[in-house]
Amino acid sequence: MGFFDLPAPLFTALDNLMNGLPSLPRLLIWSALTAVLSMALYWLCSAQDKVASAKERALVARRKMAAYQGTEFDEMMPLAKESLIASGKHFGIVLWPALLSSLPALTIIVWVSAQFSYTLPQPGSSLNIYTDPAVELVGISLTADNTYTATYPDANGAYAIVTTNGEQLVTLPLSAPVPVVHKRQWWNSLIGNPNGYLADALAIDAIHFELPTIEYLAIGPSWIRGWEFSYFSLLIIVSLGIKVVFRIH
Image 1 (cartoon, helix red, strand yellow):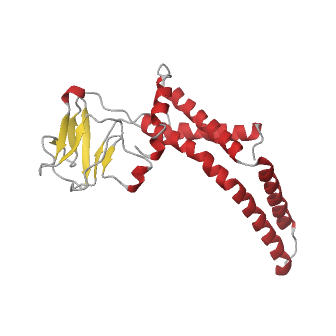
Image 2 (image 1 turned 60 degrees about the vertical axis):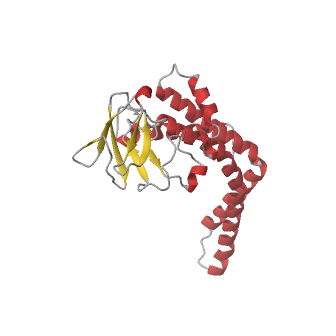
Image 3 (image 1 turned 45 degrees about the vertical axis):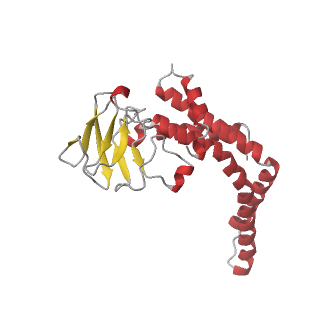
């Protein structure tokens, strides 16, 4: 479990309270909660009076720069310098509150990505598997495009995926609907893989599973149908609405 995964059990418990709702309303609720949490934390972490003052100074400096009609370099440079300094101060004042307020939101986004992207196959259904780099596997059918197809087991029929060299890669069924198991990387201290990791001594770097994807919209190209479009669209709309209504700078 990585740093951003620490609140995951709490998020799962809260999501279980909404089990009666379809997936899309639950996803949108999490999107709205992310927007509310991030905007509220930004408001608490930022000195709004200082932010407003810095924003106004930056706007005034840019207006002076835009209103200048001359062509003299010596006259234009002080205006450009004033504009850059004012904009830099405004950026510096809002940077750390924005970063701090984004950290809790990132924990939700990481959890939502794992929770709402894929589902585990039904026991008895086919599951396509391929490794990186490609190796031969034992006891699994090989298709014409060098993809292995396994019959997904239930909890009582667990079996290990093994290479011809006797190396055990992973055991099915998977613990979570995550489509890859790989060797542990440095960033797994931030975001972990709930299915575990491959041993460093193995000849392959990753094993991939073609899990069923979840579609939330029935129209449009594939990139619109997944969780990302619905989640981030509402996140932006709610965040902007909060910013306007509560006059957050």
